[in-house]
Image 1 (spheres, rainbow, N blue to C red):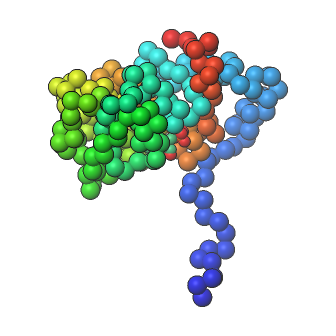
Image 2 (cartoon, helix red, strand yellow):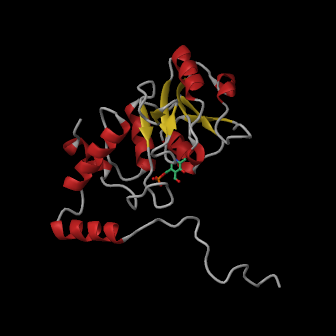
Amino acid sequence: MKDRPRRETFLPFSRPMIGEEEIAGVVDTLRSGWVTTGPKAARFEEELKAFNGVPHCLALLNATTGLEMTLGALGIGPGDEVITTAHTFVCTVSNVVLRGAVPLLVDVEPDTMNLDADRIEERITPRTKAIVPVHYGGLPCRMERIWEIAARHGLAVIEDAAHTMGARYAGNRIGSDPRSVFSVYSFHPNKNMTTLEGARSPSTMRDTRRT
Ligand SMILES: Cc1ncc(COP(=O)(O)O)c(C=O)c1O
C-alpha cells in the first residue's frame, strides 16, 4: 500500500503557459543571432520600465542575482545586518550571508504570510542597514509602515518582488515607489510571468548598462 503512487502522472508545482506566440518568439531570437544580450532584452527593459512607471530597469540572470547585486550596490558586508522575513525562498536570506552580513528574521502575519511590519523595530540595532520585505504569493506587504520605520532609522528598503509582477499597492505598481531603493522581480517559470529565467549575465552589465 505504502509504495502505491498517489497519482498516475507527475503533478508539477506550476506549469508555465507557453503558446505558439512564445515559441515563434524563441525561434525568431535564435534566427536573429542575438542569443545573449540583444535588442529584445533592451525592449524588455524599456517595456517593463514603462509598465511600472520607473526611471531605471535592468534585466539580469534571475532574481537571485538581482538581490545579490542590490545588496552589493548598497555596500552591505561584514558587520552589517539585514532584516527580512522568516518565510521566503532561500536566496533572500542566503545572499545576505554570502555578503558576510547577518540576516535578522522577522516572523510573518498569520493571515497574509508576509513579514509583520509591527515587529521590525524589535530587531533593529545600530548595525542594521536594510529591510528586505517579500510580497509573498503576490500579496504586497504593509509598505507604508515599512517605509516609515526605514525612514526613521535611516535604513534602505529593497523589495523582494519575485512573486509580484503586475501587483499594485495603494493603487501604484509594486516597485514604483522611490522610497524603496530597489525592487527585484523573478521571471522563473513558476512565477506569474516568465521569460524562462533572465536575460543578462552580471559580468556584462557594466559594459552594457543603459540608465
Ligand atoms: C521570494 C523569492 N525571492 C527570490 C526568488 C529567486 O528567484 P529566481 O529564481 O528568479 O532567482 C524566488 C524564487 O522562487 C522567490 O520565491
